[in-house]
Length: 427
Image 1 (cartoon, one colour):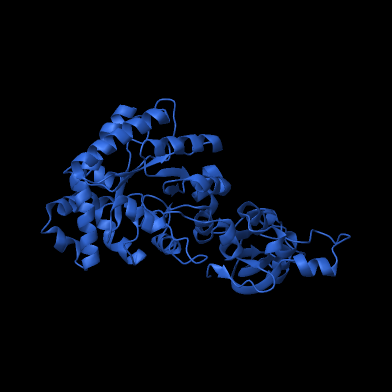
Image 2 (cartoon, one colour; image 1 turned 90 degrees about the vertical axis):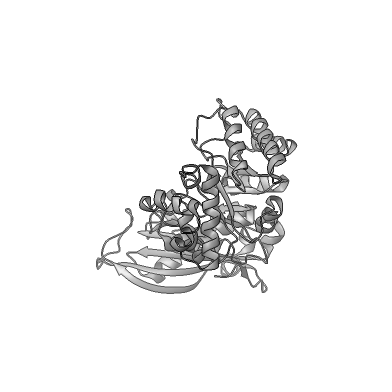
C-alpha cells in the first residue's frame, strides 16, 4: 500500500489485516468493523443510521486465502455445525479519521485494539496502514533521516559502518571511553550503546557521556572525523529529556531509544525537542510479530516509527542469529525508505550476526547504499583487530557495489580474506 490516502470529503485511515476465522470471512470482517467503530455485540439505542453513516468503519475488500484445518491461536468460538475449516483472508477496513483524529495512540486503539481478543478469530495480524495527509501536519517525522545523518558523519556514497559496544554490560565509564577511542581510530562511522545498557547504577549516564565524548573528541583530533555515538537514553519521559540535553551539551551527535520500551508517544515527545538523530532499536519486536497469525507486520509498525520521528530504524540482518527469514528482512529494509506522506525517509539499520561477507546480499536486498550496517563480532573479533574488521566491511561493500565476487576481491585484500576465513563458517 502507498503511504498516502486521498482525502476526499472525509479522510479515512485504511488498514490491511490477515485474518483467520471459523466463521465466514464476510461475517468476521463485519464484526471487526463494528467492534472498532460504532457497534458492539448487540444493537444499542443511539446507533442510528445517521451516526453509522458518519462514524462506522467500512469493509472495503476481502481477499480469500487457503483455509486451514486447525486454528493458529486458541480461544476462537466455532459456529454451530462448524465444518472444521478455519478460513483465512486479507481484509481491508477503512476508518473515518474524525473518529480519533491524527493521533498515533488513538489510531492504534482503532486499528489494533480489542480486535485481537474477539472470539470470532483464531488468527489476526495487522499487515499495513494507509494514512491520510492530516498525520503529516500533526507529526513532523524524522528531523535528520538519511541525509542529515550523512551530513553529521561526513559519509557519502557508501553505507555507514558501525558496531555495538561489547561486552554489553559491565564496562566502567573509563573502560568504555578507552574502547570508543580505539573504535574511532579504527575508522568506524558509528558506535552505539547496547540496548541492555542505558543508565545503570554501575555506569551512570553523566559519567558515561563525559568519558565517551572525551574519547570521541580526542580521536577526532587524530583522524579529522568525528564518530557518531548513539547513547541509549531509554528511560522515563523526564529522564530522557535530561539525558538528551546533557549529551548535546557535551557535543554528542546521536541518541538511541528502545522503541517498544518508551512507546510511540514517548518517541514523538523526544522528537519534539531532539537536536540530534534518534536511533530506534526494535528490541522486544519479536513478541509482536513472531507468530505468523498474530500481532503486526514491521511494514505497518515502521510507518508509525517514522511518523513519530525515528531517524534510524533497526530491521534485523540477513543470515542473522535470529529466527527471521531473509525475505522478511528484505521487506523491512525496503519499507523504511518507501515514500510516506511526501517524505519521512529513515535510515534502515542492519545488524545481528553481520560481517563483511554479508555486504553483497544486503546491497541486493536494499538496492541502495543508504543503510547503516552494524557488525559487533564481525568487526571487534576480526583476527587483525577492529581496524582490520572495519576495513573488511568497507572492502566487502566496495566489492558488492562494483559487482565483484567476494573471493575475487579478497584475493587482493588480506583484511577481507581474513574475515572470510574467520566468519564464513559461522553464518
